[in-house]
Image 1 (tube, one colour):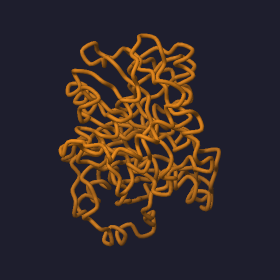
Image 2 (cartoon, one colour):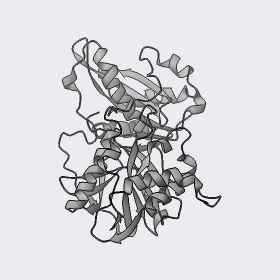
Image 3 (tube, helix red, strand yellow):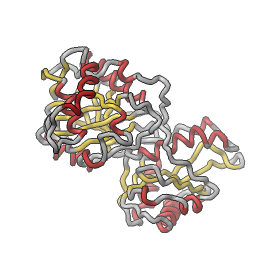
Image 4 (cartoon, one colour):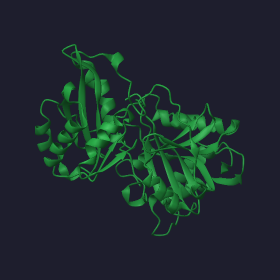
Length: 379
């Protein structure tokens, strides 16, 4: 990879200036807001060299609000475990998508002080549908999971085409359960609406239940282990980008009325955004420039790209895909490591929110644009 660096430490101020003045530029009528915004950002970067770090907005630019909660809360209300059928009947099905997200796992609660509480949580990618069912501890098996999921589908006006699940510890059971249902089962960490809901329940629901045991939480997340011993493999040569840059986009662009939506993101996807986050914040991300943009974007879509992480200890820029795969994008020298630290700080400030954009060059619309959220490993 080649690294693009900006003119000077004034990059952040230039970004604000360019963002304010964007609409005054005589762009062609076919230019999308996302294309214009990314082009404006990349035009701030003028030097290409093989071993310099990208300049990102200074640390202050990604710390507009130190009070931002790290847990993103969805606007939808949790469905009551006491009356899931009633809640299903009250859903606005026009807002429910056909991409669903599933979790089946024990919660940090003991029923009658003896047995773990087991739940099935099922939501759609928008977070508008939320269905919770309790599993008896003696019926935690693929047959019962399949029965519950089939019952929910039968009672739903919107039928799922895909059901994603992220929990490695439950992979076999869920995979077997979904194998006999007419859906595409996808092991994936792109379960953003589900992760928000679980975090919400961990914070607001389980602590208020009789038998709550906080020490029982935090086991069985991605991979289901305490120690992450995964090793990133090299990205296939045919899919590598020639250039990439760390950049920041205004969070307001991803909110209602913003310029980024499903119409201009190519084969990408947009994670739900908490509307209570400060709109003047910047979402950190990476723009990848390559003449093979369509091939790379299609590959990322097929592999369920889940995020881009800077491993500061190993000095690596790593792409996360599927349920537990990692691909090495670049090694980081000292300067790049410092910039990557700013990138990670920006992610932390917005609860793991970040983006990846793949495009041919700075003048092209993205072949794929993904707004992603890093899912905590201890859900």
